[in-house]
Length: 195
Picture (tube, rainbow, N blue to C red):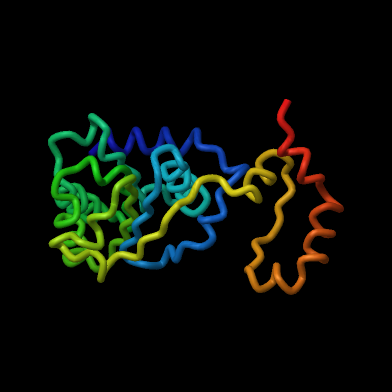
């Protein structure tokens, strides 16, 4: 466990939070079991680490981030990790790449059932089994899908200008005002030019 904590603290130390994906605001972080699925490289790991840094930097010992494809985790079980973490006062367990761990769904169910005060967030690239697993995580986990970078997020990353999300109804009714608001601050077509 010491090695896992050391790696976790090192990752938190170096993660930047100047740009954060908008999904971080859409997730109900108060839920006891949260899944985040998405393609490889979409930013799931970064999202977890940023969330931890932004919310637990004063109490890092309350949280633990573990990548299940790490050599530091080999030979351990999820249930054993959760048991030890809770015994040591842990409250928020962040498990990355769960699909790399055999029997992950059943062990997450056991953790959920045995540790009522523990909140668990897990990520994976291929979490289709959640809905079909024998462990029946679909009744326990709230699963979010992380998409690739949106154009709105790309603009924020490139320019520092943050535009709000608009619903389709809002766009349909107020498209002229929205377009004016955007074009007063940036020229969107310049980001589509091919040079």
